[in-house]
Image 1 (cartoon, one colour):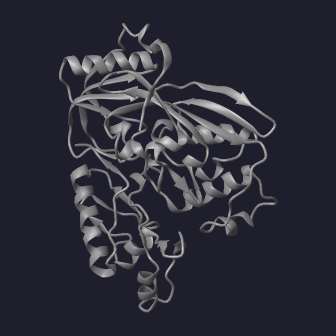
Image 2 (tube, rainbow, N blue to C red):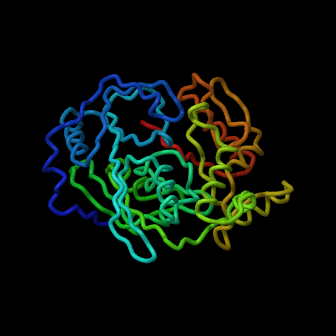
Image 3 (cartoon, one colour):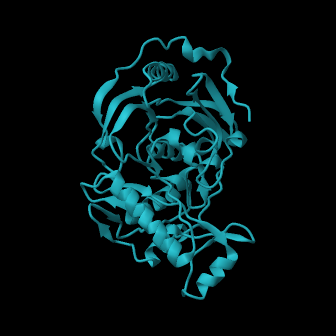
Length: 355
């Protein structure tokens, strides 16, 4: 794979001034679990140029570095003894438009659901099924976020950012991002090597609605018509009925990936259970809902110390107020072992653990 640097490296020309670096900065409001942890240093980068200056400072001072987006998919086991940088680029730019599509370049610091609302208000389809997913735009290609039969990769044209070591800007086209189920090159070959600053999306003026996944079709019967607006409303209604608000109960949304297993394993499970929910991938494999596996293992609604499993959605681990990242990680490991023992299925955490 070849990473293309942006021509002229214009980002470096105005990158001499550095934003304020805060010391002993509390991150409780910066992570949706609400863990009461502190970063030794914290700064925001509003432009790629500011980001480059901060990266240079980090290298010069030999500081540990963590790039923090919306804090919705991350666990800090303890205080962070280094520099936390929050990319806060917030521009939305229309860069191309045809009779069928509109292409927008979006800053990494834009709230994801604000972007979805923006596209729906514009009558542009593609992201409506991804409504109310927490986090910022910059994280969406890393995780290749997805819901209700749609993934971010379906609309992503390219991803831009800065290489952490050389501090040169780069751009990767969609096919170069190696997108997979909750996966991308940014979680593998480029993990810890880049900082995403912008994502470009192509959105449809004549959208094809995808409503067959999960209980979305049933929810849509409550609305007078099917449109990208009602799909968004239905997705929000479903998510709000099942998922806790992080402002009220700390959580990171879906904590585990839905495992992909063989059709033969599902047949074995169907001999033990009346109904086994699954979503076909191909003739040999299917996707099992991790929440169902966890619920059948007896974990739904359980509390262990200051943390636990949500009472309405077993896929969500929660902080009941004074929990720590270490407690959540230990609970997750216990659940993984329990599911493995009962179903011979390996669960994988979707949430990132800061080391």
